Length: 348
Image 1: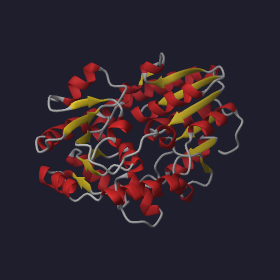
Image 2: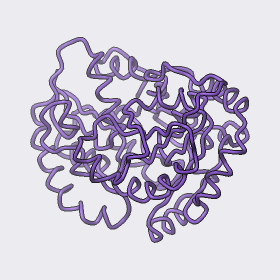
Image 3: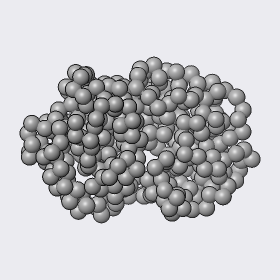
């Protein structure tokens, strides 16, 4: 089978890598993904954006990329879109307009429960199989099916309620968010005598680490997010998938987030959810209490970060970890592989 792939986010490429490693039949793939996985027409990093100004600068690149993806689609059997709706929805529309019979699988659906609920109509019009990774998404999509969550495939290590004398710092995976959080994380790190572990995405090059993180002499570098979280007494985590990873593993943490003032103001106007962190959002949809603190913008100070550490309740995090695993139920990788092979009717 030949597959057209669009995976722009670092997390999307981690999930794609896992799928490829466990897809045991012959599979050729083309498209946009991390260069460490093959020979893409564009690298995922070519589309890395954070904020409205970054998006504007990438519009022309995106138009060219969609044109090239349409050309490649004439020779493929199926299409796999992963996350990134700002790019993947226009791509899906163009693909369907040019090739009405091509099967488009959308994995990690647009988060319409947070904002832009009008996207539901486009997703259901232009995509054939809608594969959800959160059980509550069927409240918003009529045609989606829950296939499990990819974190339950990858997380094998869990936090133990003991003293490890280690603090983890996870400043995100995008250049902008890393650069905004690292000065604060450096300040906070100086307040601890514990080992300070800086968790860096596996796909980052030495050049990216040097450019994005600046002075990291006080930190030990780790590329293993799950091991680092499991072995840490506490973690400072940028918003995103890592917050849910920490919650599943059971490591106490606080969400820390800083954006450009304009981007944050726009986001607050558009997003109507009471929480930012995925664990808190998931628990809220289940009618349960929020798990962790969320320190956003001006609230993200050294004093507040230290206060969150001092107020941790390890037992509560371990209990919530089991609740979240029960809510998510199972991993998604094997189901996605079956769907790609046409052997599963879970997504319609």
